Amino acid sequence: MTTPAVTEPVTTTPETPTYESLLAGVTAADGREVLDPATGEVVGRVVLGSPEDLDRAVARARAAQPGWAARADSERIDLLLRAADAVEAAAEPLAELLSREQGKPLNGPNARFEVGACAAWLRATAATELPGGTVLDDGGTHAELRYRPVGVVGAIGPWNWPMMITIWQVAPALRMGNTVVVKPSEHTPLSVLALVQVLNGVLPADVLTAVAGEGDVGARLSGHPGVDKLMFTGSTATGQAIIRSSADTVKRLTLELGGNDAGVVLPDVDPRAIAEGLFWGAFINTGQTCAALKRLYVHSDVYDEVCAALADVARAVPMGRGLDEQNLLGPLQNRAQYEIVARLVDAARDSGAKVLVGGDPDPDAPGYFYPATLVADVDDDNPLVAEEQFGPALPIVRYEDVDQAVAMANRLDVGLGASVWSSDREAARAVAARLEAGTVWINSHGGVHPMIPFGGVKKSGYGLEFGVEGLKAVAVPQVVNG
Ligand code: NDP
Image 1 (cartoon, rainbow, N blue to C red):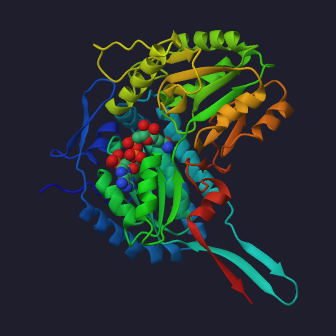
Image 2: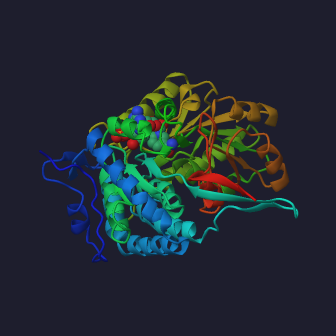
């Protein structure tokens, strides 16, 4: 019988881990192989837990929750800060494991950046003021709004930013006095198990547990009667399944379901000045980012210049194995995602669209590398525009007037992010107000901050993360009147 991949908390301060010691803590000789998407080499082996393992983890989390909630807020703050220190102390081995398993390069806005964001989010969550306070005190009535822990929080995450998104889900939940059971994506389990192992070097037993597993473990978590709130980041289809399976327990949900973010470039831009920002808005993490720019609408006055400037940037950015320090783009994380990108680019080319850069992966090269690809002269109803590519291929659609651009940007049933690019901030803000998206950036795309609320509209999900709104989302309000 194999040992389930449940991370065991430790109570002593751990030694600063090496890559080998970190990996040894989360792999098992008889586990399922986890492959490096850049090379096909074995990174490690993970033992996938069963739904019954998940039941045991939830039972432990339930038992630990009252004691965790009873601690002073200052103690939980202190532990989150110590957890941030532990992540920083393990930053290099964590980044290496993330790079090998997920594929993202060490440098640029990638593996080291992601591990750094984990520490930053833990600290920011510790520093956020708790929600609540007096809502009415008129001499006759004294009413207070308080926020209590929900109980046990389930956290189901994706494979694109596996460590950072886990921290986004876990840190506020812990701060508010909840205990947490994490279910990582089957594509990137080792990164999350290793991160949880590091956090558990400072957290008390059973406050944070991770159970690796496939969709059946996620499904058990989302329907579990012992789980009070679910934080989910992933596809809309899985989010819909979670909504259904949460109904019996009226489980609270925060759903971050990705999208198909539009960027609108107004005619007054300087194409060379915005090209880098546009490129990284679209190609961060090799396009595998929920709030990346996935379809670009450019006014015909500047269309050719914007395409040319973007193409120059795309040609210059190095792609390759993540552990090679010079690379800034990596492979797709898995074969299914590679095939989605390849199918959509091929469909666009077949329709007569023009591939400006890329679109020509080497079928004999190892790994799931798809080159940075720009597709121009593409119709708005082309599948590369209408479907989420979630990879390094950006369609660029021409428009003639801003009403047309706004209509195209709003026509899909998702709305996580959007952006407007202009040298006139007020003109950009006026267009932003018309876009149906949870966040609209001006002259940038996709930047998130631990104090700024983040969440989607339409089928991009519901609920807010980060800042005080994020704390409220992992708590239940209670009015005390009298
Ligand atoms: P999924 O939505 O299938 O997976 C996300 C997480 O949900 C994984 O941990 C998965 O587990 C788990 N899961 C799967 N089925 C269930 C279920 N019935 N109940 C509860 N949890 C479940 O995303 P994929 O990884 O399959 O990616 C598919 C598409 O989703 C991508 O092409 C992309 O468009 C989008 N996506 C969006 C992301 C975002 O940031 N919003 C991130 C990743 C993908 P397991 O992987 O072990 O099956």
